[in-house]
Image 1 (cartoon, one colour):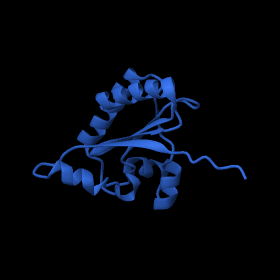
Image 2 (cartoon, helix red, strand yellow):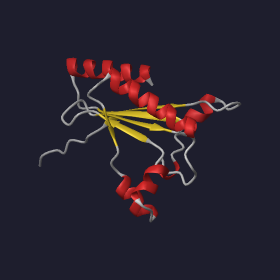
Image 3 (tube, helix red, strand yellow):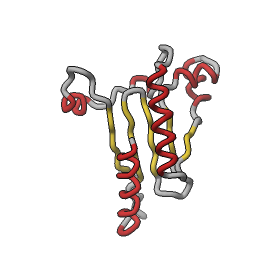
Amino acid sequence: MPRRRRRMSYGFRLFLPQPGADPLAAAAAGPDEEGGGVNPDPPVVGNECRKRVIADALTRADPALEVSLSGCEETAEFQDASAEEAEVRRRYMELNGPEGGPGIQIALLDDGASLTVASWHKGGKAKAVFAQIWECLRVM
């Protein structure tokens, strides 16, 4: 019987340290993505601006990355809200590499970010993809 190949990925999580909090304890606690980045409170202008600035810097550094606005319909249905309300409540921006590309996906949250990449790359291709990852992390 053929063996199924599991698709795995590497993940990086970045977060803004909170005043007075131990950053190592915060890192060990894991991401606080309650509701998958959905927040019922009004957006904080500073957070939204920071995400936009980072997204713009990422797309300048890697023009193949595109901001994805998909998922609002599912969020709206889950929350019993309009698509416009869901977009305001969805507190993350997602950037994706091109179809058939290295498989990089970035999520910009109110207080941090995550970067995941498929782990199927080998040899020189893996080295090139990790150079791209490190550049994205440097930009963030």
